[in-house]
Image (cartoon, rainbow, N blue to C red; front, side, top):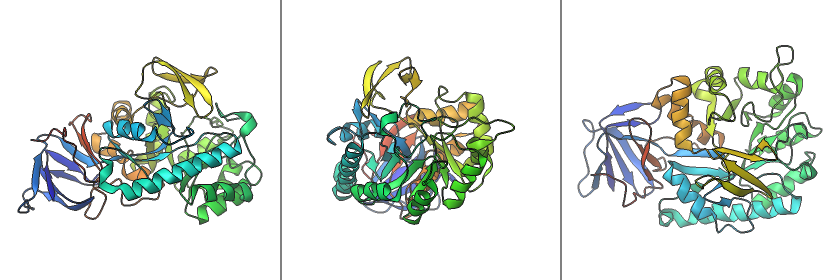
Length: 393
């Protein structure tokens, strides 16, 4: 058993001063204050001083990092990506596809399903690496008008037969699916995906208010990268953005890098959705953690310069890391660290359908990020594995 002490802990719903957290194997055994709990005999004690203990971050929308894309022809690059994620506090993630030819998407889903199942079996031997919990299918069921950098020639109309092919290739590991609700056939696919436990997310969409509401009635419960690749809000045509901001049935995620969405609009989004329904994502690409240059996003090339990731002059994902997104929320909105942490842990874990992630409670996964009081990552504990350089004392 491992015992962790620190200056503060966020569950994240509760705040505990001078906490004691006990880890048994890959799970949290007990959480409380040092005054209420005692260190079991024989436990390894690690004191993190004035640090903050918080649930490991969960990124439900990420295309790559460390020079690797999740749709590469083999999964050999995933460990490097997962090490980079852990360095920035992420302990769980959903590798996210980008629109590609059908056969290549099916092959990528099969490879990612293999990686997810291998991670489940590896257990503690994975070390300081984020764990893939499922797949986010972004494309090809998206709008031509709001496709962004997704290749137009590979977009497909949503049909139950095509969805079934994706589902079988992924062996049921699709956890989130982005879809444009205005497309013919979308409502039937939304309903079937929701029936199978997929969180259907509205995005890359030119939907008006009626089509968006029809998607929600069919079972959609989330929205993908708020404001980006969406029909803009108009006071006479609220569209998908108006529904996203006001429908309490919808959670929504946002890229809080200050590039994709102006900081003032990030603040507006946070006020509208609140701490229960707002989610942080990175939409990170292979260029994340790398110097400026040219990298791959799916089948096409992107260029990174001065923190902007573009393809053909359009924004093409980001080089954002989740720890920076958390700090940006504090800076853009004035929210405190506890509020910001929910958006990177508990809330995305719910969207991904993994209620035992994103929180520090007895029986939950021992996925922990050790932060400075200001939100800088000092160490990451994934699956109860404390790295040698964790910095405890």
